[in-house]
Length: 73
Image (cartoon, rainbow, N blue to C red):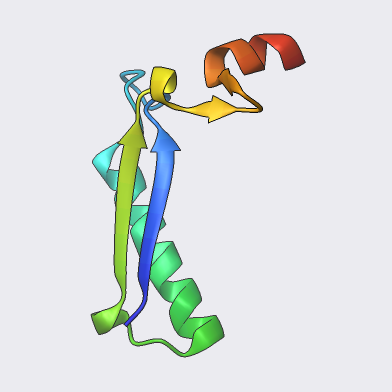
């Protein structure tokens, strides 16, 4: 019974607040299909959870993601 937890930043999408419900559904379907194809896992017992994280709550290299992006741009 696979459990996949995907964490993404809350950005992008048509409203700038994150992926749409359709985009999330596509990710869930794609991850489920991948586990079924590669690991022979049953889609009916595969759980996929998407957590959206505010940008100020996400860090890379010791910096909030916004500051990190400014440094690498």
